[in-house]
Image 1 (cartoon, rainbow, N blue to C red):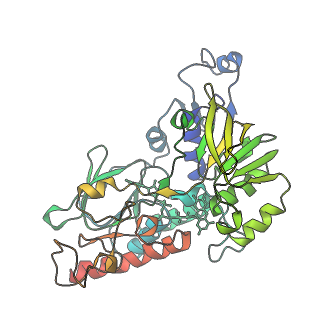
Image 2: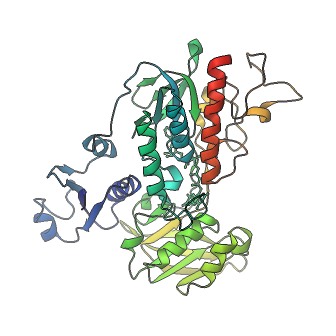
Image 3: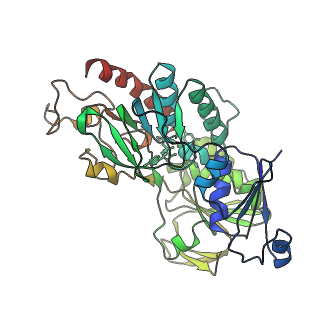
Length: 413
Ligand SMILES: Cc1cc2nc3c(=O)[nH]c(=O)nc-3n(C[C@H](O)[C@H](O)[C@H](O)COP(=O)(O)OP(=O)(O)OC[C@H]3O[C@@H](n4cnc5c(N)ncnc54)[C@H](O)[C@@H]3O)c2cc1C
């Protein structure tokens, strides 16, 4: 049974944000498009343009008009302040790396808190089907995998603070403190940064205007069933774009993949290449990039340009999914003196060594542990780390491994 019904205008960005959050959180919900003033009035609103949309009605009758994600987490009983003045371990990011660190940290007796700015699952949470994760031969949706991991972490006693964003580090007094966007301070003896990467932008005009109103980032697991009989455009040639194309092809009339490179074979796993080649409603355009986004309130069409011939083609669509990889958001680390590489990834362990010496300011006799940043007791795991393998299983492995070094740090310094 649906836990909530969400009403909103087609192409509404705030409604998309709520759908995405509920889907990633594995909360069953119904989405109802409000297209006419009559439909809006039946809900007690003035018109289909009423600012109280989107409207979320929960199964217990609670009605939330144009709610924020934080208000929804409060309604679900998921919004908390930290319960302790000090933890053994604070983890930032609840993607596969952070959730894994939470399971291992809490199960091994560390007082553990996880801070997540959005919903659990990270990038994996937007994947319709992860097929290469050990033990799930038939694949598993990222949202389900994340929900299982969350249950596991909570059962072991980890505390998860959702809809909270770490914005600053404070490493004074030997603690690994984190300041959240509302000023809340998390104090811990050790910390793991598992904040992953955020989706890269196309860098074309109108992109922010249409974000959530036709332009989406990631594989759009929450949106696929809404694209029935429509033309969907997916940008990117990597595995996440390939997965998205196959998933949308089950619902959409036609899927066009716009790929910058010469061939999918250079960037896509062979099993996905084969499946795409044999799916009749997927079209692959290589040497192609998006050069314009057109529309009024919502996206109405995209212009694709062939990089070799400069020929343009316009596709009428309300659905553009951008899966072109990501970049880490680690600006906070720069202010805190954490070493990053040129692209912003956190540098750890032996990568910090220069000519056999640790980085300047390193205060201990030992060298940094594997996964440890240049601040002792502050570790990085998963996609945010310089040199990491961008895979679910490796993020999970690094989360677990980071906890081993946290123990070592807490005992030996
Ligand atoms: C669509 C898609 C499909 C994929 N499919 C596969 C697959 O089939 N197999 C596979 O092996 N890999 C797959 N990947 C890659 C895999 O999902 C990633 O490698 C993995 O999720 C990385 O995990 P992570 O925990 O390091 O980071 P992320 O998953 O990026 O999680 C980071 C988390 O940190 C949070 N965060 C960021 N900043 C802050 C902050 N300041 N404060 C608090 N929280 C913060 C984010 O909201 C996010 O939840 C896919 C990726 C995508 C996008």
